[in-house]
Image (cartoon, rainbow, N blue to C red; front, side):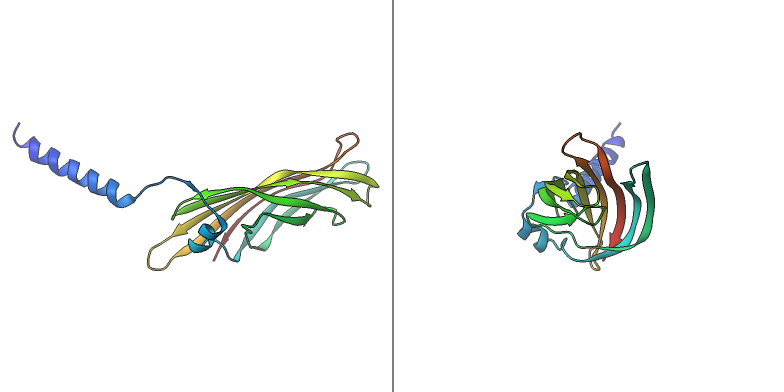
Length: 173
């Protein structure tokens, strides 16, 4: 019975130190300055995959995407994004940013209305984009991101879907 007490004490000490050294895994709200100071903002190179669809008045023409790409996550408030038809723009607005030293997530939302001359109708854009950051290593820090991007362009008159994309990517710098 006495031999198990030192073993239990040593095991408790190891678990306590491991928990102490791991650091907190809490996600905090992050500002643009926080994202910049933690090193998450910048240009990432990687690979983008997914589907882009456009309505040709009979059926959807879906194009599979699989290509090298560059992603530069923007932590600022809002920017204009061109829809899949390439003729009209919608807003991409940052909704939230949270994380810590090792991981962070920025969430964006698509919104706005725009006249699409290809279809001759006013459209509204909706969807979301999520960018997840991971910081790896200590002496040689490496930043990686994954993206998930869903966008739909619909008629304001009857809510018909005209164009969409569903894309995902993995990038590093």
